[in-house]
Figure 1 (cartoon, rainbow, N blue to C red):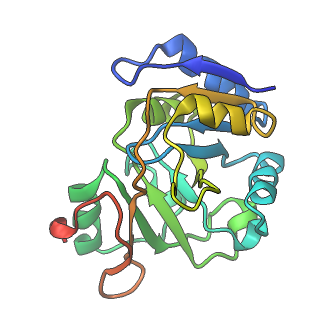
Figure 2 (tube, rainbow, N blue to C red; figure 1 turned 120 degrees about the horizontal axis):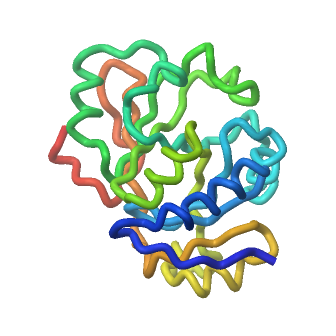
Length: 206
């Protein structure tokens, strides 16, 4: 059964963050807050954990469209091909924020994603998510937790999330109610930006 821990977004407790990171390093799955909806995440470098996330989402890992949650844009070249100045300026303007950017994948992508031509990059404006990635030292793979209820697209109450997910993951973070609007997805892998999904992020920055 998953551990259920309270972490406050304002000044997250480093000891609690360290607990989360320990779970990730051991190959565990976590449910954590972002600046949009709650996400299901694992260490990008742990193949068994990645496979578990893919099974839960009922997709093949190689064909999955998981986002990479990054601390900032400093190690972008580890996962993304060299991008032009215009693209970089868009990223700088929008991040951290409620956007997922689809960018051309680098040859140095982790093994399961080697064949992917593009990757989704996220730098959420949420101190808990950022501190987890910072302490871990590399991105986490993330996918949003959808709700099976047709009326609610995303579950926002951490206690309800815990009830539903406690036997599927190792740890659920309670950071208060989440949002019910997912990130805006922008494809920057072609010459012109393409809006794939309009979500929480404003389109005015483009």
